[in-house]
Length: 514
Image 1 (cartoon, rainbow, N blue to C red):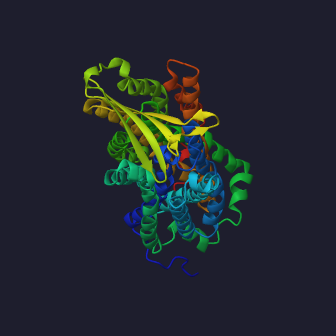
Image 2 (cartoon, rainbow, N blue to C red; image 1 turned 90 degrees about the vertical axis):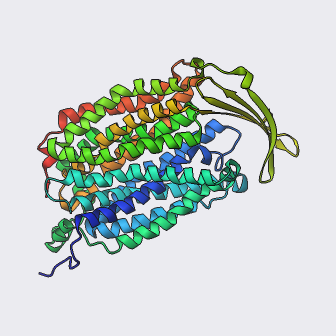
Image 3 (cartoon, one colour; image 1 turned 180 degrees about the horizontal axis):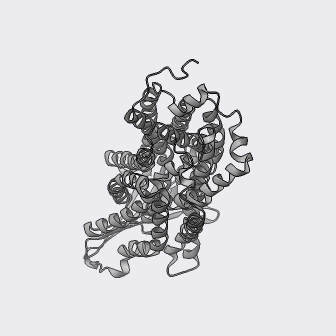
């Protein structure tokens, strides 16, 4: 019998590099949209209702998550039939192209509702691509990993989601630093989307020389691959049981904890607490930098003490701690606890021109004894030199930006870092956990679906749902409105924890260790 894989076997580190590089870039592409959600809401949606525009942007962001399971089914099937390598080459190119196009779409003011429609379409393509990427990369690495070390080696893939977010924040921060606020708002926000095309090209060059995974190559050479992985994965009641267990006993809770600790924390700092956007990025970058090595640690630890113990511990600690953490975060910038130096308050009024439009901007800057600075702006939108009237109302936009002092910034960084630590506990071991639940012939398909439903739907909808809860509670006048968004991750996480503790057994987590 001829060798089905004549190429030189890849070393584990070259496998990690090639797989991680591509997956990292796909996460960068996917999350650049979420990182710029506040800015994008003003570009692709009507400006007369900022809250509705922001929620629409989050909904568009979430749409990419909703279609991820469909990408998992489509590309997972291809991966189990033709191979891991070629499938995630396609997903890489699809993701990069969609991201670049988002950076080129004209604003709502230029092409009207065609703008959000095109952006939504590109987000759907991004979601389909990511649905196929992660399962392929995780499976590929796991099938190269030495026996008993899958948790450690696949945890490198787990870092790519956080590092992708980390790099997206760095690129945005660098772009903001290089441009004036007006330039960034007018056109500079497009640069991070354009940068991705260069990153994708580099990753493509690296990936094209990869060999197929040895486990899949062996199965293919022996004629043991599946001709219908969808039917075998979900039409077989025995295998379907493990798919459902993977979803409701692990991936669902892991998804909401991932998005709470990173995306919701960022949205909470900027939207609810009104922290300066540049400071928010700095806080997230430092927290992510300090937390990322723990993906590797907890992946390694899961090889020693078991996947279940690590993941369930992280889930439980997170859901018991969230309310206390977010209460502490909110009170850090609560101006009721700070003393203003009223004599230093300044007020200015200036005309600001953006393209063909002109606004009258009233700015009040307040200084506090602990070093906190608050800038409040009221922007009166003008049309032909007079106040712009829409639906009988004068168009006025109000905004507040709080620049926290050094001590408060480090305090917030620590509180976000703790949340990232929870993420590393539940996310570090999950790739190895999912891989070991399913046989090689249907692994790509079977593991991808529960992962992307748990992350894409339960996790991806979190920013929009939680932000809606907070906005609704605030409009109803609830005193602790800022904590209402936490009910979603707490309830979903608690349900997942109970199911995981009861039904996941050690025997299940070592079904297929290859």
